[in-house]
Length: 252
Image 1 (cartoon, helix red, strand yellow):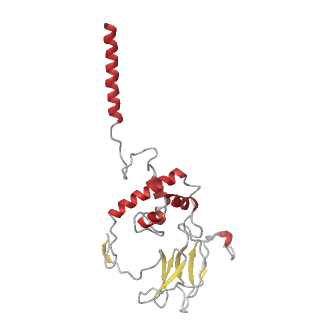
Image 2 (spheres, one colour):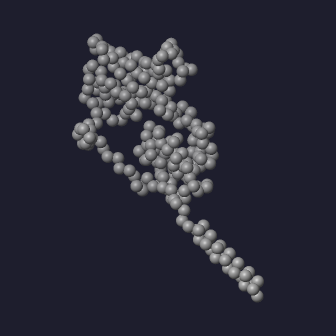
Image 3 (tube, rainbow, N blue to C red):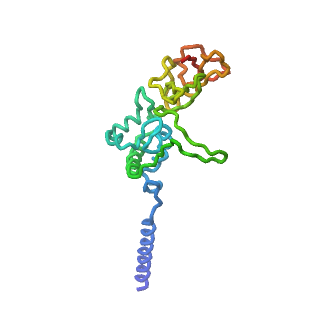
């Protein structure tokens, strides 16, 4: 009788202990910003970090995009299957700014990234970010109060600008063009012709532009910095103490 009671006590204890363990296992798990359990195996897991490290720099973090189109755009995701997008991420797009990530991301990471894009796209579509028109906005900084005046629009990723003696403005587009804004603030339709071909990838392309400040002729030298792959460089290599970014000279 004593042995039976002892056995029953052990069974009861195991049953109670099992219930405690079951309750502990059922306890809520912390969720990430997308509602996915933190550290969940097979879930989105590190997808937001993958996007931030590899995509956001070119495509932005919202529907407005960046140098490249927004990857959260409903039209982009609706017109392309996951298989198509997977191949684009894996192999890149020849002749464009889109590089191949096959040596940086594996299939599982790309799969989580695509899931993140589709979920985040739905969130942004229902709550699009407000993008205020900067025209005439008054900004109060620590030292000055100033008003924004839009001089010209429709420029593809403007990078550098410099004034010509006649009041026109030269503006570089990172995509490899020089645009001219006239003295009245009108953007000329066509870019400047005869400029060098840049290596336009990721952050590469046209950078700063400068007009010779010491010119007195009214027809100054213009200095342009841009990225170029050395194997295709056709001119004389710069000396060892110079930058590998070659200057280009152009008279508009």
